[in-house]
Structure formats: structure tokens, C-alpha cells
Length: 314
Image 1 (cartoon, rainbow, N blue to C red):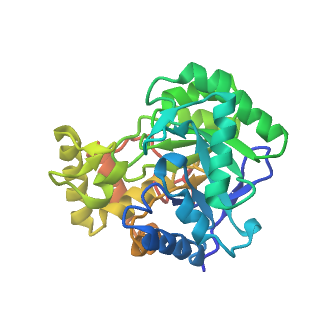
Image 2 (cartoon, helix red, strand yellow):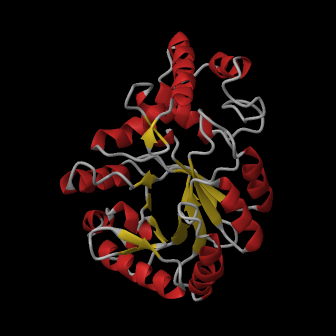
């Protein structure tokens, strides 16, 4: 079992490891596979699990955690979606919605508390006002009561997260897909959060698939089929990878790992072997010349912290 470095999260006293398991897709191949993925992560030393009601995997996680000491892992989940009674969800960031969502999650997870509670995807349906003025006060209340230790927001839009960080007292943010090997649009926000001591979790490291699978007609980007300009850039990244004999997924995960603003990386898995694959990708020896060529070709921002350079996470 690997011991991963840990960082304290703001003023919460909560220490989180540098790598977690994203549970959005663990149920893709059924209950047994989902339970196996969680067990594999724990056996490999990945003791931070990130979930959400929207993923429909919390019951699997609850089964997998039976018999596991509660203090031996960190659990994060999210609010903002409530079951609609027809197998889907409705947006609800009200105080009552927050409390109902948390209660549902605790029941599904079979635990008495979560450590981190996020506002989930208010950017999807422009729920900024409701999420900030109703959802956030409810989370703040839960934190002050000691029900949860840290509060944050998880979404794909760094602009809304930055607005949240300036309007409220958040401990952390989960940002998906906006700082990756394929795009680095969130550079300014990451720097501000780092300077302010706000934790940042990296989701969507592979941009929902294309940086793990490479280019193809069905490659996924931002949860949809990748458009032509994204596929073209992915092909260029693959070309440089091949010339240096570097796996694309290794380059993708190590690039994000290097940014010092990130507290934790949250790669996902839908098969048990992928958990270990992610760790192997993180440990793959990539030559400095590879990163330099990416900069010279204009494939990554010249200001981005590169692995092995001053200012990057060691």
C-alpha cells in the first residue's frame, strides 16, 4: 500500500491525500465491479472517495465500505440533485434540499457523516443565485455545527467557482476539465485560490475520456463526442507522446499533478485494473524534453508549471 503525501485543507484541520478515487463511473459495469474498484483503491492506499447522488453509485460505495473503519478514509459527496421519483433528478439548492440530499447520501453510504460537502454543478442550469444564496448558507451552517468539516463546490466552470470563492467562505473547489493537458483556461483562478489558501481538487483530468483513450470518432470530450478542433489537438498531443514513447494518459495525469494549486487529483475508473493503471501513469518516467516540446509546439501554456521544473509540485 502506497502512502501518498497529504495536505491540510484550509482552516478545517482535515488532511487529504494527493490522489483520490472519483466514483462517477464505478457503477458503469455493475455492482460487483463497483465494489471491487473501491476495494482496490483502498488496498492501494487511495483513501479519499469522491461521490455524488447524481452518479448513482453511493449504494455501491456503502456496500464496499462495510467493515472499513470510518476514520480510515475521507468521504466527499455533493448536494443540488434530488430524485424526481422517475429515475432522474431535479435541481434543488434550497436549505431543505441540502438537508434532504445529505440525509439520502448518508443512508446510501451507510455512514453517519461525510467530510466534504460540495454544491454540485450549479453552472449546468444557471443556478448561481439559488446555489449561493440558499445552498451555501445551509452548507455553512452544517460546517459550523461540525456536521461536515469542509464545504466547497464542484463544477466544470471555473468562472462561477471564482465568483463563489469571492462571495463566500469556501474551503475548497472541485474543478473538472478546465486545467488539463488539452486546455489550461483556469490558470488565473488556480493562482488566486492558491494565494488565498483555498484547496482545489482536479476532476476531469482526461477531459471525460479523450486524454485516456486518444483520438477516435467516438472519443469523449466534456461528456460529449469530441468536436473536430479538439480531436485535432489530441492528435498533436499523441504525436509528441509517440515521439518520446510516453503514454498519453501518463502525460495527462502528471501535467495536472505538477500544478502546485491542486490539493488532490481525482481520476476515476470503471474497471478494477484502471485504479492501478492511474497510479502507474503517475509514476511513469517522462523525460524533460517531452514537456519542453509541448511548450515549443504551443500545445500547452508556456506559463503552466511543468513536472520537474521550479514551482511545480515535486
